[in-house]
Amino acid sequence: MPGTLPLADRTIAEVGELLRRREVSSRDLTEACLGRIARDGERLNTFLAVGEERALATADDADATFKAGEGADRPLLGIPYALKDIFVTRALDDDGQPNGGLPTTAGSRILKGYRCAYASDAEERLSNAGAVLLGKTNLDEFAMGSSNENSAYGPVHNPWDDSTVPGGSSGGSAAAVASGQAFFATGTDTGGSIRQPASLSGIVGFKPTYGLVSRYGMVAFASSLDQCGPLVRSVADAAAVLQALAGHDPRDSTSVDIPVPDYASALTGEVRGLRLGVPREYFVAGMEPGVEAAVRSAIGVLEGLGAEIVEVSLPSTDHGLATYYIITPAEASANLARYDGIRYGLSAGEDDLLENYLRTRGSGFGPEVKRRIILGTYALSAGYYDAYYVKAQQVRTLIKAEFDSVLSKVDALLAPTSPSVAFKIGAKTDDPLLMYLNDACTLPVNIAGLPGISVPCGLSDGLPVGFQVIGRAFDESTVLRVADAYQRAAGFADLRPPTAHD
Image (tube, rainbow, N blue to C red; front, side, top):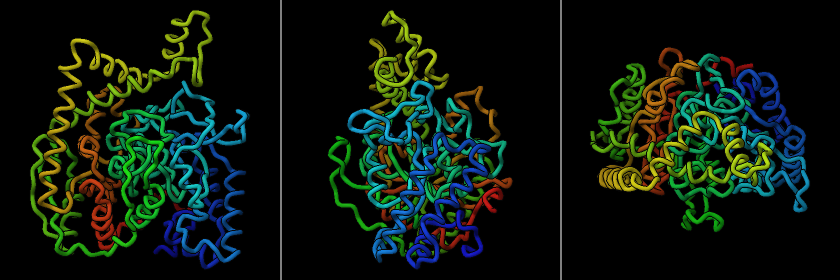
């Protein structure tokens, strides 16, 4: 099957092998992706900026390396990718002059046209790995959203069905990978924003342990939960990209200085003897029957491979949503205070300083960002700080302790990623609480700081379903091992939307 797929729809591992055998060039791969962007980019609204000329130049450099007989040990050399537009890219020279680099908007009007003087750690590491940056992908404004309808530059459409959402907030990255516009993309996961769009778009999304990947150069939303990770087409590709992204960064005080294992060596295809827990609380009321059936079928596949399946309980799961929506708005209200019309991007140009603040923020932020700033400011205000923020942090400690206790008895957890498949654009925009429930199965993992991966496990009503593997802190290897074994056995590795094929 892979050999019959168009070049743009194959995995990193497949095209990497073709590159090393000199059967294709990096320029071929880059032109294939740029062709898909030209064909589908505007319709799906996936990219906010594309750097075609620079991408082709980088691809030519990679081809020169291969021609010199080098690069065989660099799995991302010459592979085209997309960067979520919440990672800053260096677009100014040392003297402050534009260098032709890509702007950074975070999906917000308040940063429209903003050009940064430095690169994010993610861009640096992927550049050092030899990957080819195609452009910056669309997202919910400042990563706030579950559907990618909150971007100031319009919603992203799901390549499986243009009338549905791709999931958020990394929806542009997910749709770009699913539709063959990039071989992989970066995302950020604060409450599920890598795994949920991966699930709704039929691809693999991996949120690493908090602290494994540097947050340097990520525009901050909720600093104690934000985490960078890959969106890809296979678990093996997730291991390859994570290998490049992981590692200590002294510029990020939350970056952990520990050795990074060889993740590819964990992909043995073997789960016999592993104990895998299924938390009963994750099969929430209102979950679509087709989603539950696909996830339970996936659990059955792993049981058939020899894993021991045990039911477990995480009783504080029900408090995860409320806890998350106290902590994240509180941190967002502090992080977004820096956008005042003076230091970054948009300015209303008023002579009066306070009036300039108010008009810049009033016109620069969208409704969802304003809603969360108001919620967060209230939660942090005198008289309510102990009742809301401190209480939420106490519940966070309980949720973490429950995960630690359960994961001391099992090797990993299996759960749905999202209670539903992709829904119609606009279907939930008038009901924020209903929208927030989309992350009910993912956000406890962020609260506890654990790694989690979403893997496709079939279709329901013609749309993709994903399930999660959740692991112990810094045990990415076991998470990848379980997910890879399932993907090899289940036969959904070649799941592609109808619109992806040439």
